[in-house]
Image 1 (cartoon, rainbow, N blue to C red):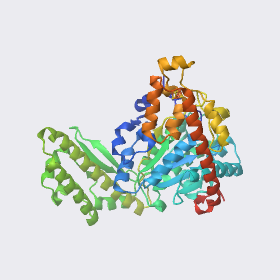
Image 2: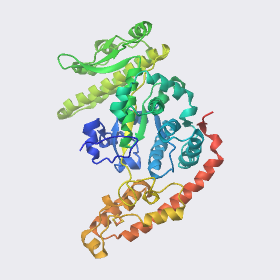
Image 3: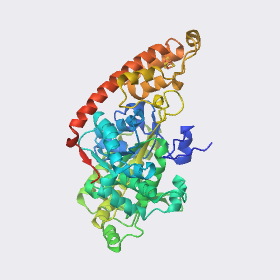
Image 4: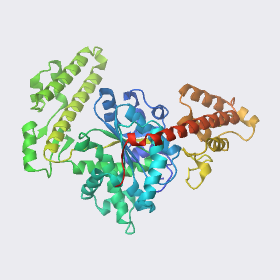
Length: 491
Ligand code: SF4
């Protein structure tokens, strides 16, 4: 069965692993060891996939600038599904990201037919208050799309690079689709690219944490990032199968190309055969791999990297690891070279009023299921817990939730329960239990039949009551301090 990813319908994702093959999403396990203190969703595999998250992990490790960006369509009640996204925004902000949160009122206006006033009310009352209550820091930017001039201008420019056929292929748009809906798609791409505008200190890695249904936006935006950029740094392969890096500037102004040529050769070659040069690193190495960086500070940076790598290579003693080490060392040089090229290219593009967008990275998290099994649905209040639910009512919903337990206690003692089919366990996994060991213990007890559903429900209901009570108090505090936050409203 083919997975259909459509952000405007809640199509079920039957098999997450298929997304890896069909859409080129990488398993998150690959990048997990590179992340300093991974978030609970990462450790617990709630986040299962990513695109280009390596660059975010590296920025976290090195202290380089990066951003996190996400958006919420003001459509109804803020619930635990939204909390998952907010938790990830806030965690990245704590890890050093500059944070951007867009309230997608243009989308709500065009898709739901909501008035601007209603969008504002829902945006503030539901999403912004909860975001702040969960820990969003005031140095991040929150904006309504309709009030953000830079997003609107960028959306218009992006519109030049996308046509109706592409939108039909990605989103299934037809002749009936209204024009504003199409504009809202360009606006979302602009939301994602906005953190890389000059007014926000230019190109940098940006991560967008999403559910897999939002991937079409990411694919469109990644494509647009390339089309909008004045130059492209590409990995290419010659007839002998040797890889090299190349900078292309198709359509770039002549003066910009000349300036770029002054700073780097038109084509930069970095072949694996040059790996041996590492043993005696010197400035001539730069020439030999075809890289000439004119700015002294960049040469300095590059040489520091090379020396560090060479030291590492010299320390690689056991001969059986030599081949592996060589490969590893080569990849680091390659990455460093590419990074420097991208920086130079971005500088020249900015000088000539062009863009140098880095394609956005993304993470993909599992959806929560409905409390009664099946999907969460906003039209069935018992299927989800809103962050504004009365705490007592929230606790009752937990007690009414479907479990993965057996019909009788005797059966459960004999056969054990099924935590992977249990919405109470899911609540603990996603939200209520921060302690991994405690969670694993509950899982173990469930599977072995020594735990009964009543005790889980009691524990989860108490934790839910406490969480909602505390969260709602913090929402009231957030309301009092709203003017300390950087929020752009529609004028
Ligand atoms: S014992 Fe707990 S985890 Fe296991 S099925 Fe029952 S409620 Fe779910």
